[in-house]
Image (cartoon, rainbow, N blue to C red):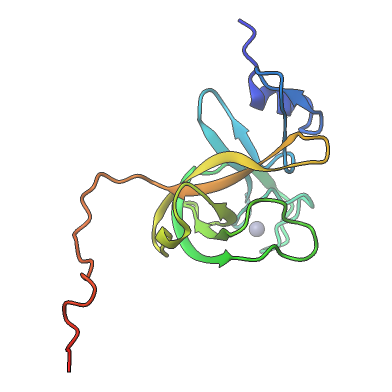
Length: 182
Ligand SMILES: [Zn+2]
């Protein structure tokens, strides 16, 4: 077995070395190292820090090692829940200035609140942008964001709607039926 464990590779290489996928065609690079960890098939978790003094949770990890909430310096690296709820989002129809975003347009980004209480700023995927709603349950995925100049895939974390069994009460208005015609 020579299966390439992407997460292991990224950990070993500090996320900075370009690695090849099984196909050998595209390299895949995380947009930033240390944002997430993948153990086994599909089990992806964001990496945050937890303040041992006040309990505040941060994402991403506080590189300073200092809790911005209580100034404590005892921070522990933790794996965060991979499912949360959308608390706000925006849809962007024009490529933002500054060159920090190289992905597809339009796109949607916003905040997802995890059970730990931390809000994660994220891109959304896996559905039409019109389907997004505040309060919607979403789960973590790792996806291609764009390609760099060398053609390598830049990976980032995103959240996508959790598929619920088609049990939503049908309260969609059928357009026009209630309109009065003069
Ligand atoms: Zn603290």
